[in-house]
Image (cartoon, rainbow, N blue to C red; front, side):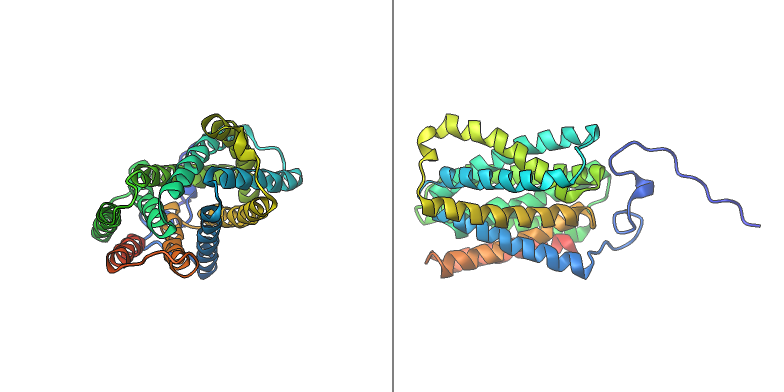
Length: 310
């Protein structure tokens, strides 16, 4: 008679080794993402690039972002009655992420005021998976493979070349700190929301509450920085902002759901395929200049992200 299996020790962490799915465990071999999750995250990536393009079209980028934030809150308020009130253990994650999202929205809107979609977006999004991977490895005590190391080098080279293009082409240098600030915030909320959604187990409810809180935090911040005049927008701006809000909400709800189904670093990296969509939109819809250097930089960023997923 074989001995009874040993019971795992009690764990109170958000993600315990004994409760991780097989694809999450560092001892399980190669990590993978199912086809359904893969396609869903690709859809989220396209939606993300789309709503960024809509924000870029606004006369005032902060006003467009504020309308988007209002739209987020309205969608969230329509959804939360169908779920239980967030448990106490989820609130630290929600509050932290709401503040991080506020920083992200401010940085991103300021960056778009200074530069093209096809320049800002690859920098802002490309640096994020590298930060997520490194922090995830440190937090989850997972080793960094040779391929992941190569991915970081390739991705970093692409970001450096994209930044160099700003300097060589006489574009506003102010976009760089704002775009990198947005990247840091993206890395922060990706990890925070991936863990917070797992604590609760209700991704849609989590995102709904998050968007409500983010609006509550972002609104006074942007009014203090930009003034109340940004509230005076025309019908077109409100319509575009609400469409952007719907696309953004759906994109992030899909992403947070995916982070409950697959490893957070892999989902975070796969989302960055939105760089391809953003560069195409900037070229085809906005007529932005896409020279060889920008294409090479974008290709290196995408290659680096892909390497980090292997």
